Amino acid sequence: MRLDDPVVLDLTGVTDKADLMDRCATALALPDWFGRNWDALADCLTDLTEPVTLVVTGWRAYADTRPREWRTAQEVFATAVDERPTRLTVLLALGEGFGGSDEPPAASLG
View 1: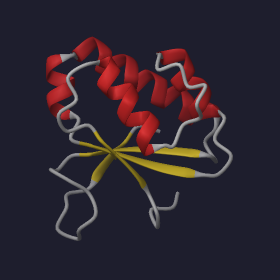
View 2 (view 1 turned 30 degrees about the vertical axis):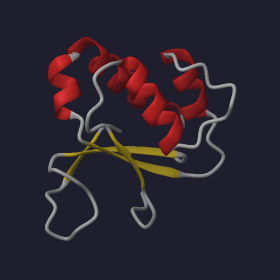
View 3 (view 1 turned 180 degrees about the horizontal axis):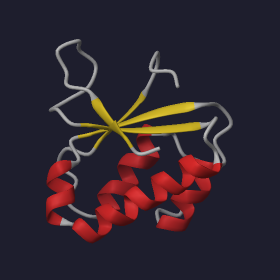
View 4 (view 1 turned 90 degrees about the horizontal axis):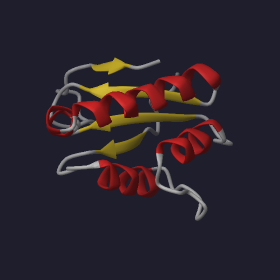
């Protein structure tokens, strides 16, 4: 696993699935055909051509307000990691952000 150049998926302010899908599309530069649904996200995550370390930040409010959606998102991320372990690593940042040496460690989904 490399943390040299992670992709940060900041979910701060995300209130629903549509917001989550928009953030995923932007952070991961997903293709135009990305349909902004769980199956399309799974397809995109397993079709990554280069290895990606995805660090998810600001996720707690979304997890608290939309627990079922958050569980589904975690399942999609975990399944993609299981299917393509050399292409995708997903980490959940437990602190307020990611990047500084004062940040707490991240929890891994895969």
